[in-house]
Amino acid sequence: MARILTGIQSSGVPHLGNILGAILPAIEMSRAPGNESFFFIADLHSLTTIKDAEVRKHNINAVAAAWIAFGFDTDKNLFYRQSMVAEVCELTWYLNCMTPFPMLANAHSFKDKSEKLADVNAGLFTYPVLMAADILLYNANYVPVGKDQLQHLEMTRDIAQKFNHHYGETFVIPEAKIDEEVMIVPGIDGQKMSKSYHNYIDIFQSDKELLKVVKSIVTDSLPLEAPKDPDTCNVYNIYKLIADDALTNTMRNNYLNGGFGYGHAKQELYELIVNKFAAAREEYQFLMSNPAALNHQLEKGEARAKAYAQDTLGLVRKKLGY
Ligand code: ADP
Ligand code: TRP
Image (cartoon, rainbow, N blue to C red; front, side, top):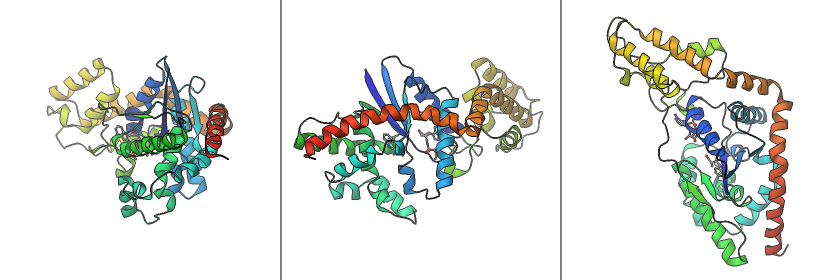
């Protein structure tokens, strides 16, 4: 049995790129019979950048609701808010005292963030130690992350090895799991879809707003009658990531044959999103307007996570002589 753990940033409503590139593949992986998945909303990490309590709360709920709406099984897996298992903060302190200052000072992500952000706080600096605590508290074997998080995983391994060396076998040494074939979903302007580029499609918006965004996908200005190249068209390139083979082929032929305008393609993409994601959109709205139901789903994972966390902390305290 492998224990898979990963933290999900709570940076706002997940967009189509997050859903196709991260949420659906992770849910798929969590269904494998031999795996036990610990997935959590990294809402303590988000305090490094988001100071407004209401904004943070909305983001946390939106992320959790999206995962559950897409079928993440909160009984088979542990799904929890990082902040609800505050034991992680205690472990962070112990690990802080085992972490060499230069290791943190040389972290790429800290250097990056401290150049870009106005608020360079100590939380940003010790961000990798909280991340190490997230992982080591639960003795995770595999940690699926993007390439940008690899250095943080290396630090986690270093910190764990140092602790084990000093105090005897305590932590499992985790391994990063990088998916080399990640799908890149283009945004409405053709660049990678991203919150930071404001080019994303939020499928959880109302039908009207969704249609407006789909209509704003950038295309060239070939007239309706002209044959068109599907492969260079943003509408087609998004459509093919959602549609099955038969629909994709039909759309492809429509482009190549001409007599099919970008307006038609956009309408079909809009209808496909609405149909394909009907159940998820409905469940998302339900959870967002019923915080008690959403909380109930999370609290199940939090109770179980807390029990694991207390076991590990008990052992760590003993080793440290507390
Ligand atoms: P954003 O760029 O919108 O801020 P994040 O960096 O928060 O998105 O990414 C969260 C997860 O979603 C990551 O696993 C990331 O790889 C995935 N992801 C983000 N954008 C895309 C995209 N355009 N295509 C595929 N996956 C994406
Ligand atoms: N830092 C990760 C990111 O930016 C999120 C995260 C927090 C995480 N704690 C973690 C990922 C533990 C894996 C394991 O995406």
